[in-house]
Amino acid sequence: MAHFEDLSKYSYWACGSLEVLNVGWLEQSGLATALPTGEHLDLLWEHCKIAVEQTRGFYLCLLCPEPQRGIVYASRNGMSLHLGSAEIRVISADGRVYAAPNLIYHSVHTHHYKLPEEFVAALQTGLVPGSKEYFESLDALGVDWKGLSTQRAASQVVPKGTEIEALQKLETALRIFREDS
Ligand SMILES: [Zn+2]
Image 1 (tube, rainbow, N blue to C red):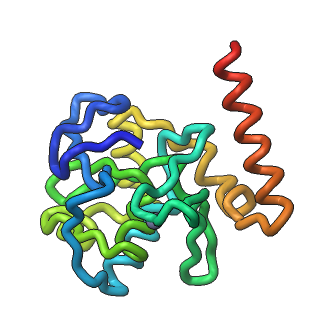
Image 2 (image 1 turned 90 degrees about the vertical axis):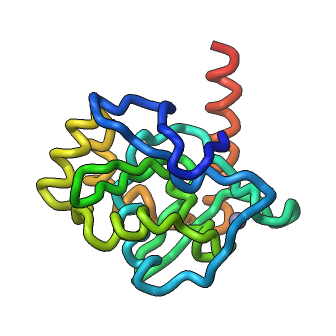
């Protein structure tokens, strides 16, 4: 996964005419940490339910020690998501937009990555993910979100055991295919 400084200008995908800032594109060292609150985790999780700019491959968490490094699955409030193949958008009340990899939930939950203060404020007082205004803003940004959220419940359920292996083989095959074509 690419590394970007927190609150630097986002330029990975389209932004429409709006200014979008990077948050949570972490590198292995120099992580500022703080114990996360349940409220922050809940707010992040709600945003992770609406994945944007989904890619086929998975980014692995660089903060996890090598032997345990794999596709990240997370569960909260009775729901499971795989993280590392899409981004989220957090939109503040005054229209500032933050782009983060959805691994950010795991980075905060498991590695205690300290979120920038203005990003926390946007989580707390910004547009509610799933609301009409939120989706209208995603459209204004020109990000791809349609079709991801409607099938979310079915596609994001955590596969077990052999299903994970099959999924990883499929991902590898897709990657090889794409590199060949
Ligand atoms: Zn990790």
